[in-house]
Length: 438
Image (cartoon, rainbow, N blue to C red; front, top):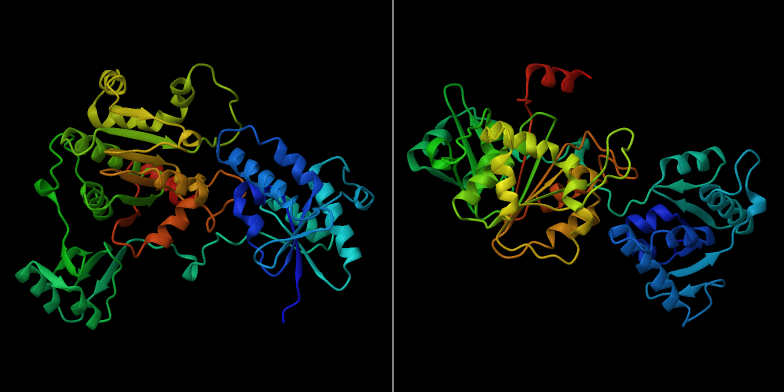
């Protein structure tokens, strides 16, 4: 039987995932007293962090009726939870004994000394705290529950390129207008639901995708019905993206791409096209408010005024795509309720019916924040998650643990979802050059 371990949970873990307090079965969980003090600072917030803080506080309060938190309380998965007083005398020389992180370190050092035969591990999303622990000989690790294990560290692209030695499959595809998915499987070609495929031979090629159990042609040109905005794809990945955005049977679409690849522009133009066709009643645009570089501080005005700086990319795309230089059309649509700008932190409790919802910069959201948004989607709605996982500005999440990566990987085999990675920059030659070499 494996020996029980003692896991010390940092504040960042409980704020990131409130279920972390239940996630160590057959082991002992210790919560430093200073963590409760730090959680208390978040309890009045209306966002996900506030909800997580309140959940942990209420759960611990409920445990008081079954035992003593100082001595430890057993919960349903043979896990124990206890609150540990700070070992201030254990704060190493050179560290400020008043800071929360250093007091958590003192708890880890104290428990390691008291539990000589046990394995004590400090679990934290804080990189700097893990580095401190390593320097002091304390076992520490990230919170791995949501981390995605990627083969060769490559995220699902949504498209395969297959070079055929015998071109008869392409001939049959053009002759019949489709191929059976089982026929491709017989040739060692396996596609996820709604995955795109580029079949190539020496003399010809075919762009197609899996729809159900068939491989069908990608829509292009007039068949995409982009008459209102008049936009066209500049490369094949953009063509794949437009196909997914215009399909009514894909309520969840994810698009990755470097800066300037056109993901936000294509999505907004497709949303406007579908709105004009009467497929949706409104477009809702949201994003995680995470600044690049130094924060500009509090902004004056109402919610719309506060969100305006974060929505500048959307406004730029209106100007470019619809030649709405004075933003007359944009403001008119906002006044009519056809376009709404909604902060990500205000999503809980809402329901979006007949809505085209765009969540930009989704790589800066946690999986729990994205789950909150996606589960708000009602009947007749579509949600599009956009982002560049090479540009993550939020502390505590990375390439493998950000919400967008997790969504892409976990839903890639589902019928109701589609994904594509835009590989080429189309903003300008300079933008593409800098994005690729710096």
